[in-house]
Length: 331
Image (tube, rainbow, N blue to C red; front, top):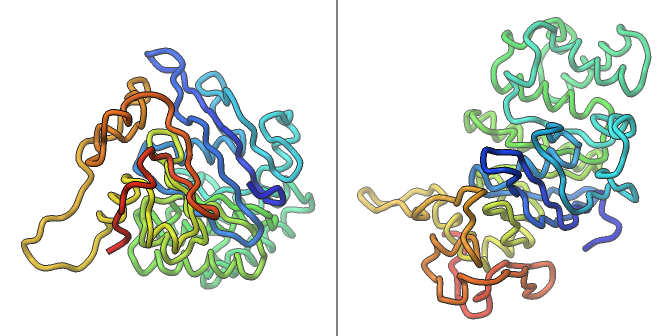
């Protein structure tokens, strides 16, 4: 793992309190993000992507969840050991997050400008007027027309795409070195999606910040990300450079995701899909967690711990048959 990375997550385990007791939902996740690098974090809903990202900023609800093992290094600081007041100094300042739902993440009782300015005043100080002027600059940066007037608008007066841009402006107002974008293009039309993707790439190029891009849309990943980390049932099952993963996947789950990417085809052809559904966190199968859904499963896939196996360079796969199988890349 790159020792100079902005972010290094090492063997992260996160548990949640449920009716079945404390249940492990993120198990042994390791990944790293360098300056100026966009890392895609992909997988089905419930795979642990968002929980991993929330753990970085210490946003797992106390009493409901806990980091039970592992380290989250931001530079030379382990975020899992920092006191709350130090973590608050990093959160929104050096490390920022764009949340999934801009309508529910923005407070309907306050103007867009006041909510963006609050972040600046919290970390940089200064008077309200100066912070509002900075908020207008950020709205202009993310492509909101008439930004100096729109800072006085409320969230309901912005469209979905504009609210998402406002969330990006809020995340970037203090010039963070690391940005976590949790499905920032979900529920947006394709035109707005393309604009948001272009904006994130431009910000990376201009500021040199590292970005963790969480999504289930592999088409977006192919266009934007330098490296890809694939999660399934709380574990990282494959990680590789973007082009390498799309051309030569090493895990059957990745092959299934690539095959299921929407594409133009002949009328009447069957759409590919992965059979079954992910396991419940309190009922994980023995051995490889994907084995009940995998068409390549053999007996030894159903027992023991499956390690991450490296196959050259930075490509790793949690599959016991990774050297035997010839898996298909993206169509």
